[in-house]
Image (tube, rainbow, N blue to C red; front, side):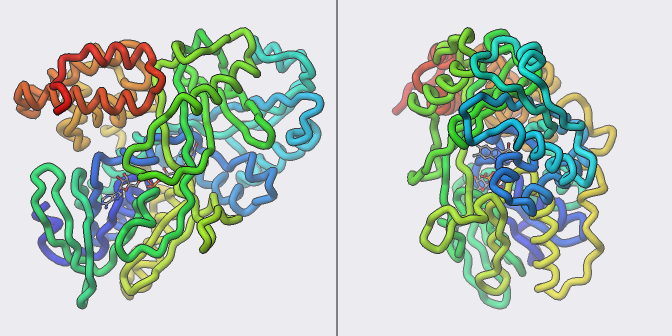
Length: 495
Ligand SMILES: Cc1cc2nc3c(=O)[nH]c(=O)nc-3n(C[C@H](O)[C@H](O)[C@H](O)COP(=O)(O)OP(=O)(O)OC[C@H]3O[C@@H](n4cnc5c(N)ncnc54)[C@H](O)[C@@H]3O)c2cc1C
C-alpha cells in the first residue's frame, strides 16, 4: 500500500479480474509503474465464473463473425503457449438431429474445417465427423432417436481463476503493485488523476496519483464514476455433477434452438452449463436460482435421458455475469462479444467486454494505446511469448484440476498468492469447493490452517465459516447436499 501511495503511478488499474490482471502484467513487463486494486478477492467477479473454455466460438462462426473467431482462435493457442499448466486441448462432440434446422450436419462439417483454418491453419487437434453409430459409441447414453451423426472439433480448457492469479503472479514478478480488498471510490483530475481508494479491511482511505486510470471492472464498469461504458449484463450458471452420473469423456454440445450448452469433463466431475438471461440487478451478489438449475438439468436430461439428473445430484454451482458491450440504448450490439477500449476523458480508459480467451490481446491493445497517449517509449509487448510462470513456480498448486488437499498448499496460497479469506482458498485458489463432495469438512480444516497462519481468533474463524455458507447458499438453490453439510458448520449466528 505504501508503494502504491508513494510516487505518481503511470497506470492505476481498477479491477482484479482477467482483464485488469492482463493489463497489469503487460504494463509491468514494459517497465511502467503499475498499481492494481481489487475490491474483493482477485478473480472474485466474472473471471472465476465462466465455462473455463479457451475458444474461438463455433457459435459466433455460425453468426458469420469471422474476425472475432479468428482473433480468439489465435489467442487460445497463445494461452496454451504461455500457460501450458492451465491449458488443455479439449475435444468437442456436437451431435445433430433430424428436424433441427438450426444445426445441420453438412453445414457443421464445413464450419469445423473453417474453424480449424481460423486458428492459423492448425487447431489444437484436427476436426472430423462421426456417423450415428460412432457418435453413440463415443458418447454412451446420448439420445439416439433421430440422431444424424456429429462433428468433432477442438477448443481449449482452462481454469479461469487460476489464469487470473498466475497472470497476477507474473505481473507481481515484473514489479506491479497489486492489492486486493481495496476499493476505488472516486477520482478527479488535476495535472494527474487523484484517486480515492478505501481499504476494505481497515476501512481506511488512501489517495493514489496516476497519469492514467484504467476501468477494468467487468460487470461493474458502467457504474464507475467517469465511466462512459454501456453494458448489457446477462447471467450464466454452471452446475457440477459427479462424472459417474454423466460419464462424458469429451465435451458434448447440447442444443436448445440456436443456443448451445455444454457437458464438460473435469476430472471425476462433469460441468454443465450455461444459461444466458438478462440481468438488471446489482452485480454484487449474483446467484443461481431454481429456474436456472431446472433449465440446465432439463436440457442435460433431454440429451442423456437415462441420467435422470435432479437437483440432488448437483455437487456445486456458480453464477456469473457477462459484461457485454451494449449499443447506446442499452441493447446488446452486434459486437457484443468483442471488446472495446475507449478514452472518454484525458487519462481515463474504459476497457470492457471481450472474453477470457482474448484477455491478453485486450491488454496488449490497451497498454499500447495508453503508452502512446502518455508519450512514453516502451519496449514491445512480450506477453504472447514469455510464459506466465517460471519453471520453479509451477509447483503443483496451480492447474486445471484442484491441487491435492494439504496444509502445504494452504500455506502456499496464504504466503504467495494473497489469500486472506476461507473462500479465497476454497473457491478461487483451489476449486476444492466446486469439486469436493465433502467441501464442508475441507472448509473446516482449511479454516483451522488459515487461522493458525493468519492468527485468526475464534470469532474471526466463525465469521469466515458463516461468510462461506452465505456464498454456498447463493450458489446453489434449491438446497443441494453440499449446502446441507455446510449448514452444520460451527459458525456465528447472523446478527
Ligand atoms: C457464464 C459465463 C461463461 C463464460 N464462459 C467463457 C468461456 O468459456 N470462455 C471465455 O473466453 N470467456 C467466457 N466468459 C466471459 C469471461 O468470463 C469474461 O469476459 C471475463 O471473465 C471478464 O473479465 P473482467 O476482468 O472484465 O471482469 P471481472 O472478472 O468481473 O473483474 C472485474 C473486477 O473488478 C472488481 N471491481 C469492481 N468495482 C470495483 C471498484 N470500485 N474498485 C475495485 N475493484 C472493483 C470486481 O470485484 C471484479 O473482481 C464467460 C462469462 C460468463 C458469465
